[in-house]
Structure formats: structure tokens, C-alpha cells
Length: 315
Ligand SMILES: NC(=O)c1ccc[n+]([C@@H]2O[C@H](COP(=O)([O-])OP(=O)(O)OC[C@H]3O[C@@H](n4cnc5c(N)ncnc54)[C@H](OP(=O)(O)O)[C@@H]3O)[C@@H](O)[C@H]2O)c1
Image (cartoon, rainbow, N blue to C red; front, top):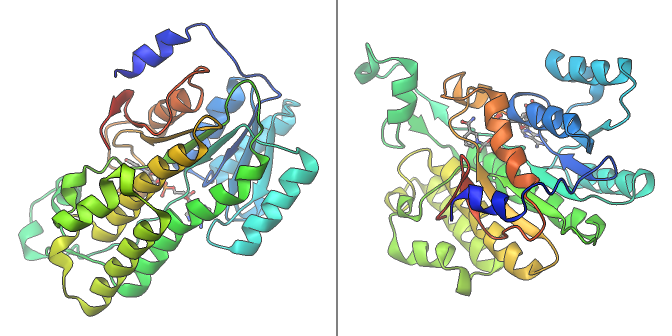
């Protein structure tokens, strides 16, 4: 289904207000910061979070908060949140419960890509950085070491899942279903080169949390032993498997929550952020707009779907 059809289905339904509370993770820079700006401009209350304390935020994030304060805007509130730290997540959820009491939208944006890139490979002579990033593979120029792979999975998959689970009790049951948006790269199932693994992680009907965890454990074992990597994604394997697993969890959670919440994945497009070393087709504001549109889909909107730059696509 084309994204526009969802919009048309509830056209004109600006269902949110300042009473609507959106939690955004990884908002220190790039797209996450822009998501906060756009949601605040639309009048929602934004809980902007980042792993650093407020005084250590990027100058852009500090400026955004300062401008909000100077213009008397009360709909932007900052709180520190490191999704890899259980205590940080618990502290955040306790604080939210005490001060605000609930959330309507969760935008899981925080992520890392810990791949180590060898920029000095001879074959990259005379290739521009953008082309090189598109061509790099496990076998050629990108190495995923065990510790950095574990760190990437800990943030992108386990951290996102940890926060999502901890926030579920605070997602407000209302006439408008709460929304959970997972900030994902769209990974086609074909990236998994092993048929069994593909079935394990991609067939929604037989998915379980244990199966997803098993897949990640197997992946880490293969990274550690440097054997068996030929069954995993050839490009940026750790980053890719973290997103494949998150896609799987998105579909599973959408099923588990059924009509209680909308849970969707979004690919914002190829965006010029630090993660891409500034390469990309879209500005962070354009990428953020693709995310915000899904977070604000009208009542009756989809759940368990995957959106790529405004289109509802296969996982
Ligand atoms: N850029 C693209 O073209 C593109 C395309 C598809 C999908 N994505 C997705 O977009 C997300 C990254 O966005 P980006 O491109 O804007 O990358 P980015 O500029 O690298 O931003 C990532 C953000 O995540 C934060 N973060 C990392 N670990 C965290 C943790 N443990 N707790 C809380 N926050 C943490 C970082 O915080 P610090 O600032 O403190 O480091 C940073 O603010 C990822 O989910 C990625 O898969 C990006």
C-alpha cells in the first residue's frame, strides 16, 4: 500500500495536541534532533533524550533547547537516557512516570555503526568516499571485531528493545493508539545468505524473541571465530544483522500488542549524517520528516509495517 493511502484514510485528522507526549531517543544530533524540532513545531510535547547530560550535548542540540527556553516554549523537555544502560533506562522511566505520567509516541532513533573501515585499501585509490561507502563489504575493507560487534548489537537491538519494554506500561491507552516507531534501515531479507536463518528471522508466524536472540548469539559466535561469515549479510554485517533483528522484533511486537499500539519501522532515506560521514541524498530535516509522518499517522493507521521514504514496503 502506498503511504499516501494511509494519509488519505484519515485526512485532516490532526489528532495530536500539546497533551500528546513523544519520547525521542538519540536526539543529540542529526535526524534525532530534527525529529524533536519537527514534533515540537507541530505542537506535541517532546521528551528529547540523549546519552549525554544536557551540558555536554552538541552545540546544535544546546541551541535548540536554549531557543525553546528563550521563547517560553514548554513543550520541549530534555532528559538523559543511555539505552545500553539498564539503570539509565529505569531512571528515565521512573522520571517520566513521576513528571509526565505517560507517553503516546516512542521514536527509537539511537543507534551506532561500529564497523571499522580500512580507508587505505589499494583498490580504493581514486574512488570518492561516497562510492567507497557503497562498495565496502565484510571481505573488503570493513571488519567487525567481536567487541565492537557486541557493542553495536547492544545499542541497536538490545538497547532499543530494553527501552521499548520498559516504556510499554507508560504508553497511554487512549482513543488514539500509542505509536512505537523503530528507526531502521530497510534490510531486505535477501541480505541473509542462509535459507534457514532467513526463515528463522523473517517468517513472522513462527517468530519468537528467543529465535531472534539465538540468531544474534550465532552471529556473535561467527564473528568471534571468524568462521561462517558467509551466511550473514555481506555488507556491514553487524549493523545489518542488528537491523534485521530489530525488524523482526517490530513485527513480533506489533503482533503481541495487537490493537493496543501501532508498531512500525521507518527508513528515512540516505541521509547526510555523521553515521554516513556526511554522505547522503537527503538533509537530516528531510530524513526526519519521513519519520515524523509515520509517527503521526492518523488513527486506524497500520501496525507491523515498514516504511521507506513514504512508501509502505516489504521488510
Ligand atoms: N543516515 C542515514 O542515511 C540512515 C539511513 C537509514 C537508517 N538510519 C538510521 O538512523 C539512525 C542513526 O541516525 P543518524 O544517521 O542520525 O546517525 P548519527 O548521526 O550517528 O546519530 C546517532 C545518534 O544515536 C545516539 N546514540 C548512540 N548510542 C546511544 C545510546 N546508547 N543511547 C542513546 N543514544 C545513543 C548518538 O548519540 P551521541 O551523539 O552521543 O553519539 C547520536 O545522537 C540509526 O538507527 C540508523 O540505522 C540512518
